[in-house]
Image (cartoon, rainbow over all chains, first blue to last red):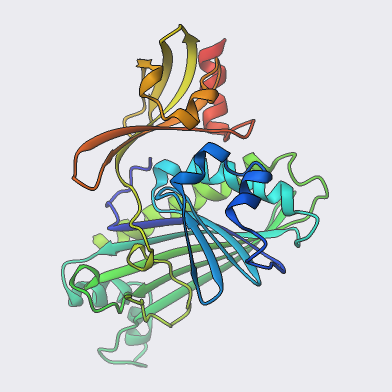
Amino acid sequence: MINYNTKPVEELYSFQIKGSFDPQHYSLPWLVKNKIIDVEEMDQYKSYTRDEIVQYNSKILYFEIDYDYFKIKTYSSATYPILLDKFISILRLLRSTVDSSYSFRVNLHTRLRNNNHVKSSLTKFTVPKLKEDGIVNGSWSDAVQFVDNLSHRNFNLNRRIILSKCYKIEPEFQHNLHIFVINEIQLTKKEIFDRFHNDQDMIFKKSIEICNYLLNIVHS
Amino acid sequence: MTVCNTEILSTTYDSTKDEAREPLLIEYSWQGVIKSISETEFTANIYDPLIDKYGELVQEISEVSKYNQKYIQEGSTFILLLYRDHLMRKQYKFEFIKYRPPSPTLLDFQEKYLK
């Protein structure tokens, strides 16, 4: 469980692999047959379909399979080790049919005092320079994105960091800010599992470090 | 169904509000490694990552979900979750790490305690 500098009101951690999938093929019995979940565990899962997207959830792990992706996610950092555990099993199973790439996302919702706080938080990242240079006067940004491309020994990483206002209208989402860290990882080594744990651990820790850094800024 | 209409920069957003079932309301968690097992209970070393403290837990096997009991072996790693059920009662749940080796954090923890 992560000790965020300011506790987010909502957290999401997800892995996604892209490829060609027939959602109907990846049923709960398929997950059992391939030892992703235990047969005795099946009754913990609820299945449902939305726009042909197949979804299974145990209230801890959420599987989602569409024609072009296979996603698994969890809503607490406490269950991230279980998510990683399952994702490795899935990647091992599907690696011959998918590209050697995956994405890992950390999506946080953080609640600010009011709309002005949301505006002023986002303004910290963008407007001062534009205002200083007389380009804008009193404007604010409702989203900002930073992009990084990094090369490591075993993978290439494209990381997008996104801060944006949440436009949901329900009271619990008002004055919320999205902090998303989206890591797109292209594995470059053939034997991808040699250092997979260490590499993913590094990506996870860096994502959390970024989130904490941003939480400090927006709440200061 | 509520939909987050934030379309700037990122159109994909997963919200708990959009899920058919709300996720488990987890209040706290620990990581653990089983050290020894008797007929009715097991002893585990547990780690609290929030306060960086180690401790010991003695747990009755019968209180672990049936489907997870087969993972009760020396050296098995698990996550212990404290959560609220639909009546807001406090409950505990063991979730075992089934793939080996587990994440480096747990592996380090396991090595430290099994030596």
